[in-house]
Image (tube, rainbow, N blue to C red; front, top):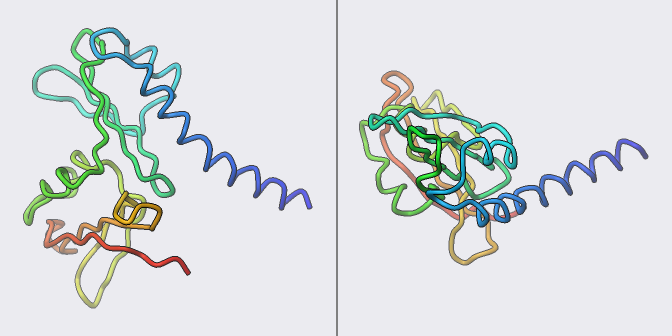
Length: 162
């Protein structure tokens, strides 16, 4: 009984907590909000990327259950410059043949899952994403050659619910 209750609570938290992101993200203001305030409200980022201009980008990833990955960029003064939801068709188009895994992760964030297909010689990264019709489950996949580690293709597709 306790195990069922705990499982139910974990499922509920996984459903509700990503909604908190939207509340906090709406409150953050570029040019005003500090990195300390973001970290206080959202916790530590899942990844941090240094940019050539001295700014830093924090990744807040909601994979594998969520369909959003937000990148928050802060200037050298640690004040918010911009907030981007990176799981978009525009960013999927940036994932081209020949990119390496670090480049792909910088564009889309950490994937929700990975699978290796030895017979095909591919490692496939998987993000759960928004798609049309809304409410259906969509995934964006990036296929890497297992030997070179470079992108060989991408796929976006509807995944029927069992």
